[in-house]
Image (cartoon, rainbow, N blue to C red; front, side, top):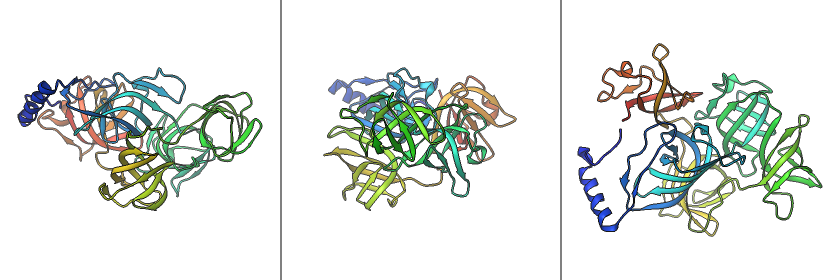
Length: 406
């Protein structure tokens, strides 16, 4: 439900903000929203900090990343380096995105100027280890966790996938790109086109290896290689398979596994600890992190744990102000959606949002807001706006709470 200055609990706060806005000529910032959902209410904002956000998408109605609801109305969206003409509708739960924008001070809202999303690996599944919750694609070991989103035809879990299925995977990588914790796995139609991220090895004229795959790049377009390809570079390859272990590349781009940041830049990033010296010194992929005694730390950082870190870049190192260790189990309200109901099936206790791209289920544990939905599920109608909080279960969000969203 939108908050306004007429809400009883917010009168004092709004009065103060309006007075401050008048005195300081603060800009009235309007937070729009993508995907047909409701948006954060326009409020007088005295200050916002330029911030880069990096992590998986956990909600919509704007884009929600790392718990922050980020207006994407004016953002340029780029998918897999292919173009800058991406749409809000192209973004999906579990996609890892880098967002340039600003974060409203003291609030969980912000605005994006650009959003880029890159699948980590796309290709056929060559191995599945159900006991270890892992699969292998183009030499990359992919670990499935409770919060992994699934998409595509009949893809609901690791058990629903089979050898040689073509999949597109988003995730949080280790330092070399040879391992990734999946945040989204989507089965796609069979294709010979592949994409792969990793560290170059055994470079010769026109060829190198990447996670055990031979990459031939004689005819490829090279991006960000001022001095050519050498060993130890982190690259993203697009091309076609030529046999089970050879890629004929059409484009190769040198990249960083974490966003490139300027001195003093604020960063809010989720990732996997890839190297660990101590709880005050570790790395996320290739990003070095130091944790001073003044930082707030929740949980115990360790090698391989997933963390969210907020801080500022100082001489190439992220100096943390806040570190939170992610729970391996999916929290009950890890995902939040604000959108119009595209369709509803009350007999199956499901509804779809974002023009049908997000499925929501409810069950006997779901709490319906009695103020806005007094008859519970009976008050849900196609075309109505709702706010849903819940957790991913395969390819759907199991709602813990549902309310009407004005």
